[in-house]
Length: 154
Image 1: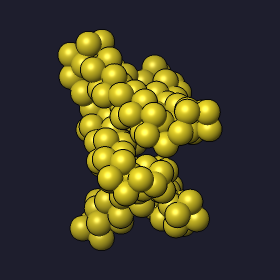
Image 2: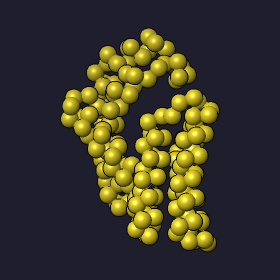
Image 3: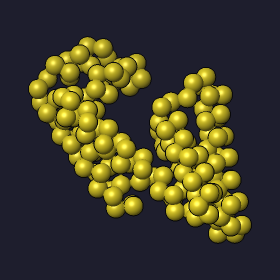
Image 4: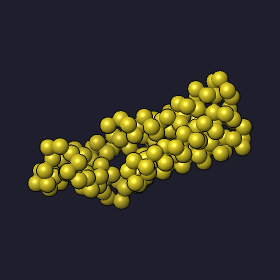
């Protein structure tokens, strides 16, 4: 369950550890190499690469390049904040357009991937006003969290 989160943070953790002992340039190279490895590993194991992996590691590589050119690790270290703010803004746009992100995700989610959730239960929940209200509230709280926490990290 936590594997994607752990691997998504690996380039940053590696960067911080190497920067302490070997300096900025070595840390940036190691962080960018770890991001590239993560994309290749996901493709090798699943034969596809998820959007979140592309986005996260694309930011690592892009911000790593900016940091390398600027000779400063600040841009590289902003990657988690940029991801959070981006996710919060995307969820906010979907919310304004009418369908909350969490509801859209639940509708698109295959019941086969969730133990105990049958097709009938899935359809039943989507038709219930209390469920829509609850998942919309969760969406609102996640938007606030991502935006506020992203700003706090910056």
